[in-house]
Amino acid sequence: MAVRVTPVRLAALLVTMSCARALALQRNHILGRATRGFSESKRVYYRTLYFDQQIDHFGFLENGLFKQRYLLSDQHWRQNGPILFYTGNEGDITWFCNNTGFTWDVAEEMGAMLVFAEHRYYGESLPFGEESYSNAKYLNYLTSEQALADFAVLIKSLKASVTGAQNSPVIAVGGSYGGMLAAWLRMKYPSVVTGALAASAPIWQFTDMVPCGDFYKIVTQDFAKSGINCSKSIRRSWMAISNVSSTGEGLQWLSEEFGLCAPLKPQDVDDFRAWLQETWVNLAMVDYPYEANFLQHLPRWPVKVVCTHLQFDSGVTDRQLLHGVSQAVKVYYNYTGSAVCLNMSETATGSLGTRGWYYQACTEMVMPMCTDGIQDMFEPQSWSLQAFSDECYGLFGVRPREHWASMAYGGKKINSHSNIIFSNGDLDPWKSGGVTKSLSDSLVAIVIPDGAHHLDLRYSNEHDPQSVIQARALELQHIKQWIKQEQV
Image (cartoon, rainbow, N blue to C red; front, side, top):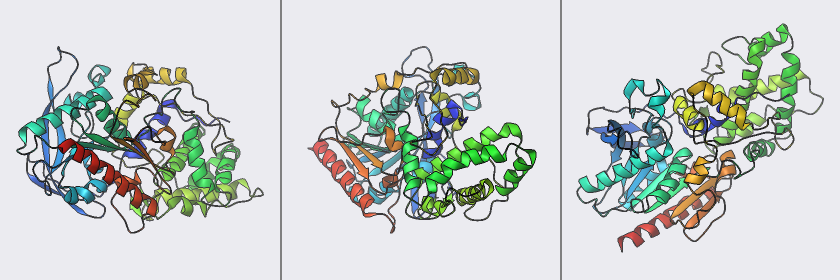
């Protein structure tokens, strides 16, 4: 039986992979007022500022402006020193500020200014205020191209208005979708940005660029090597769910066994399967070597912990197997033991920019994914552009432009560009759409063994594997070289 994860929900996994449940950030909204925030491990200081940004950079009829929020820290900046510019993802910019510890770790050494720019339509940067999501007319300006233009215009303004910044080299930094934007910003605006660090950036996860099944193969490999029979148990669990959920008593047992907030009804079983599928994907993405509070509060190497509950042989009964699955799932959703029940509508932080990303996935960020149940641990599901398009039309009245992103940003023919680092963790399923082999001396690929989703952008930690320590050192070496070349 094919798992019925809707195409839009599949595409929306990119939201989950890059939004963070950071510790609450205490900040003052007064324009220009110094602000103090807390990361998972360090205290950071910045100012919250707003920039009058064009709603439409590419037409001449829409002359409206909106307030784009950005965070600025010049605590360690020296005049003419570099600017590390974070290209905001699909969410509140303070989360990414809190979870991009690499920039904070190197700021003093580099004498760098840090800028975290919020992506239009997310957080507080809403072009039409509360009406921004009210209809497709207002959503029309939510595109990666407009966001990149926002970043370029903001950089030009900062360099012109901040004393001593006129000659400052700018390095774009981003992770996940933000990493895609960092790479594309360097490609589209090379006169504005000196170089880019694009961490876990699946710039090739588009139609006809990579096989649609590679993403889920990597998820499966993570589980397969983390425990005996772990991935095999998950593969068998789908049939067990079918068997147990076929009766009312079985549905009640599943609801109680998993501690669900709402009892399962027959029409909920597909959503239950989708919820489990997203859970396994999320675990693979945040399989960090230390206890972390990113998508959820999790132990060190959470996939290994999960797999201790899934080491069954082929003789296990359906309910024994699903009991193990329930215990595994609770590692992700209730590691602290504080959850009263599990809500299937919540797979990550509750403050994700899902509405905006659904729209982006339905227009230009079309990322085909599929499973076959043989090379992966999921139920077979083919990719259907027509089904995806129909769902998007029902949601927003728009249809996707399947090849637009690869056409706009060069697809795999990007060798003419320079000064971009593409880093990918070997455990990260989004490596499937990443650049994993260097294309030239200045289009550098770094693959990080034992690295999960943009581990290199996080704060350094005593439990970091040597691979990520070396990756950060190599990244810093390239960035310093680009800056030196720019300043000569």
